[in-house]
Image 1 (cartoon, rainbow, N blue to C red):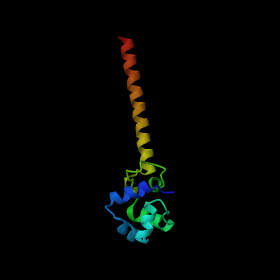
Image 2 (image 1 turned 180 degrees about the horizontal axis):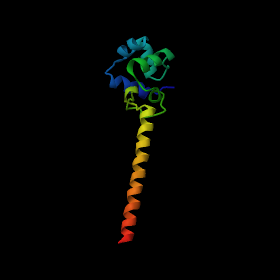
Image 3 (image 1 turned 90 degrees about the vertical axis):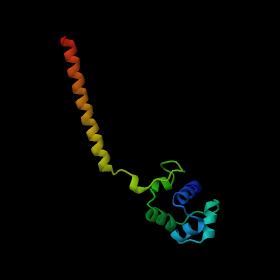
Image 4 (image 1 turned 30 degrees about the vertical axis):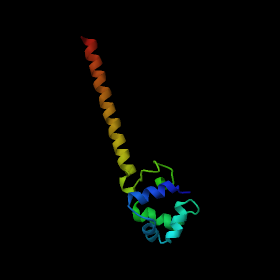
Length: 111
């Protein structure tokens, strides 16, 4: 279930009123008002439109990630391949740093 706070946050982030959100998701303004009051849920179609049209990150919308008041967008996420490349670079740099520490330790022992 999608928290009302997350719907309110995305409306605020996009400067949408009830009628404007209703128009985007093809629902009536009264349906959106009921959703915002917690009396009803968004339709699956409306959820899909929000994710696609507004570029909302689904895990944020469903409450799996992030804070309710801070909207997360798909465009702001880093692709898994990029994360893997960065992690590999970090491992490489750690290995280099380890070698430098070994050399320093050997030089200190030699003195």
